[in-house]
Length: 183
Length: 193
Image 1 (cartoon, each protein chain N blue to C red):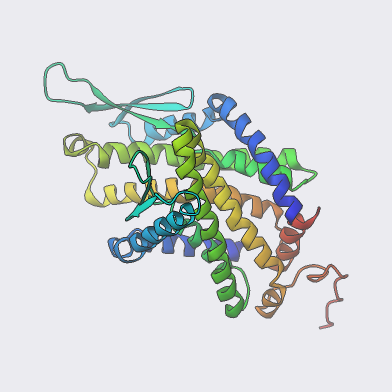
Image 2: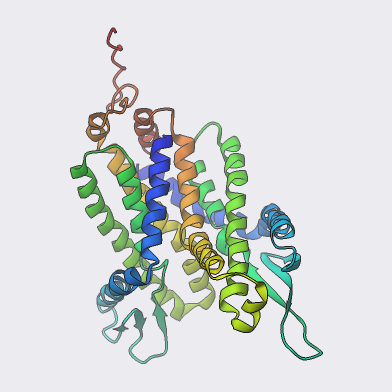
């Protein structure tokens, strides 16, 4: 437990520190954010062919409203949290890699939903936009990370056992614990 | 797992509403903490910390201009920005149907308050030392590395801590000693329904 928390916090701090460097911002975060804007615009095109993406900005065709995707809204931090949690948890690297790949898709998919919803909320009500943007979606994205991680933990008991942990009491399927081997 | 998520989503609106309506009282201890922190850590910078609703105002000793009629710089910070983890943690805890939910809510409340204060003070310092411009920033006396540290503290306090700490805290309250126990405990909690 303590090891998990220590590794999680250490990894998250390290990755977050790297993310804030100018190099990472220029070469990783900015292109990623632009990609989120383009993906969100592609989804919006299903309902509104006039929407446009320009860099990290998603706007209406007539220029009456636009949202700018900034740090905290591009899903990067949420993905870093997920990666840190999966790497910190005892599992094989193969499971970690597949979990990170699938989890990243899940987090980013919901993040696109966030951007699209904010795009329409902002045109409807500024107050609703502020509430959803500043509080509600922040919580929902992190809940998404938690659910993905919980599912991954639930489905990767073999990794925990292989890495030398005690294994869940009663085993992953809830059977009674095996007696400890005699010394 | 599905029902756990649904229960969590059902609790979120109620928790958010309660948090928003009671914010001035609920978050008062974090303002007291900020007041104490500023009195100890930045007595030359901060004259007073006041609050009105969910807005905290830092009244500084920094001059706002160079004329005879100059005033002092004040910085307003929205406390809600750094405290939405409280309703998030409450929703997770209530959705878990833990028999000790009252105790867990109390533990979470006390544990999260310092992180709310972190965001609050870091926001104030960032405004004063970085975004206010050189005329004001130069009066703070912060060195280059201190400004970098303030920027990092602000980014952490804005982008990571408010959303991550409640989740980590919730996971920690579901864990049992030993990683193996944690696997079953966390998974069972989410799966109980």
